Length: 579
Image (cartoon, rainbow, N blue to C red; front, side, top):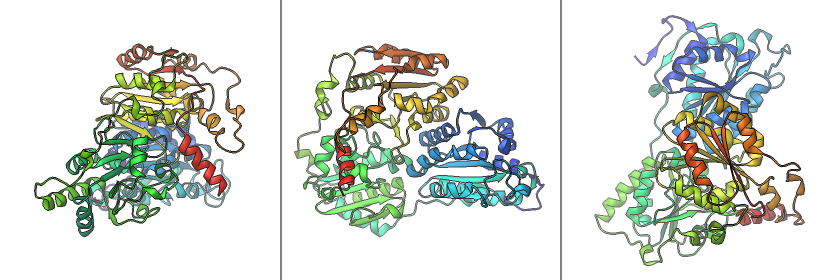
């Protein structure tokens, strides 16, 4: 039986909640315990199948849950008590919402009998409405109205979090409900979460018609390919049809960047090869897969992105289809399912013959230093070390199955442009909401979710100052993340970017007045730490950090005068101001 009716023995509401979490594969809850959510945290601590990770701030809890979910494509859970515990979660939840990350968020609430009376940290609809605060940044936000209703609300929340365009959901619970008896209305997950792998077969045939006739086909791959676990299918599809492939910045590495068909990243901090190809009049068929065609990908919605013959857009969200460009063939559905079906139809039409792709007649793509901006800075022996040079050194020693996180800032632009993410490696960037601090705390969640894979976080000094206290969390739980902190003693993206907009004056207030010694702070937290000052020093420190399998930090002192590749972004900002 997939469902147990009310005749079953009555259980506590918190026990029912734990059963649903176990069934959905939740194995970690991130949060900061507090009185108005104490029964829930107490139950998690007593649950042998679920680990409670107590973070230093609720924003860190949300970021860690986000990192956990992104690295596994599975449900993550974070929780915070009422009042500031709940509001502190908002930024991390917004980051998950913008990037379609499945997350269950549980917040505390004053006892039901006190609602509306002004209880301490009360966040009821009559006053500070926490449910309303979460509504714009979740797929579902609700207060549990009674213990017997918890099964209904859990199923609805989990169904929405894990189907279609995934995303965070929020449940707010009065503290007195957790220990009260409730009917255990149990459904197995497969009985309340339908598959969303349906697709329009006629639309697939229509798309196949254009693709098998394309002479200069290009795929623009977005992060939806990673969410769908469609990396292999997309690579095989591109190879069969001779399509060159660009990715969005957020999907960096979803298609291996050392592959002979790789154009690199299109858009923000991207590569000239991708930009020059996609904005040329040579492309006859462009197919986007899981890419929303937003501002950062399209360089402020450049009209030259439209191909000569057909634009095919595949996305699981119908709202993304045709939002910014007119689409010739819309494909709504799961990327893995639709690409597989598209391959099947195209093969039937080709009947084993070669495709008419003529890319092989063009000069091959060579992924050497000349593929990147300022190749001379990638081989520079200058001291302080250039941001480009140490990334070249990292690429030479990066483990083949590494998960690489980037935080937000000037260092992110160098990460997107100068790193090469290869097959089996993953690159995680919360570029949708663009929250600083995510790439600092999120890797802890990823390392807990995927302990067999090395997790490396490349962050800036300003990001470290935002959520760097979460390194204490990694130290306490012995989570083996390696943080590489690029220290230029300022908010680099703001300092350099300010010279491209407005009156062109650098914003000096974002430069530190006192030198920030990050490695010293990390050692005080119990981490092993190294300082890199010149070319050639990174390898020894990084390999030692890998071997130790403990939390570690490498501070890289870089030449802050080297401008990150933000030219196109600066033009966009200036364009917005001038409109």
